[in-house]
Image (cartoon, rainbow, N blue to C red; front, side):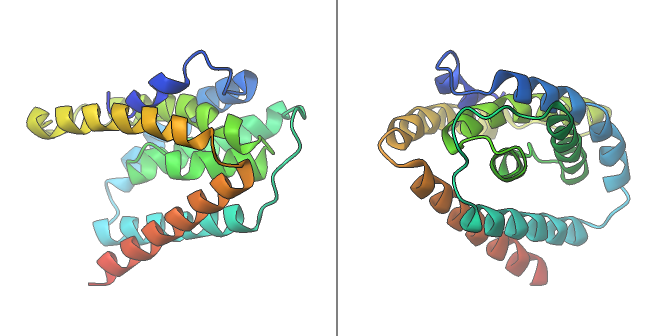
Length: 194
């Protein structure tokens, strides 16, 4: 539920590029379970370093990318390719893929930043559900005392974030996202090195 919570403020606002999101979400379902099974054989430190490297690459692309023009059609083949890649990353790293969904939509599919935020939430929700199903057989216990406050905070943060994003230009929003993602990448790499 926590991965779906941020999607609520964007529902019905027209912020998603429907076709691109649907194609990407559908394509993600195929590689995610296989990548999840593969990741079980990889040491945690290696997974953390891969996460950091991918986040840094995505951040640098966001920082260097110019805002695409509004209204351009999104190639179906590119949407499927981006979705399959995101699905593989989601399954392999065990994360929702949001840290790569926005950069992929903006830099690979040329979706405007504002639309990419909402579209990424559709893709992330589908990816997270597939990754969760792939790990359902494991003996992982969900701690509701941790999960429920996180869920509530995520919903409130998403509402505030949507309100604040409306006051910021797409270029600034993209650069802030890229800088935050780069900081996360550096922190993850440092934690893996310790």
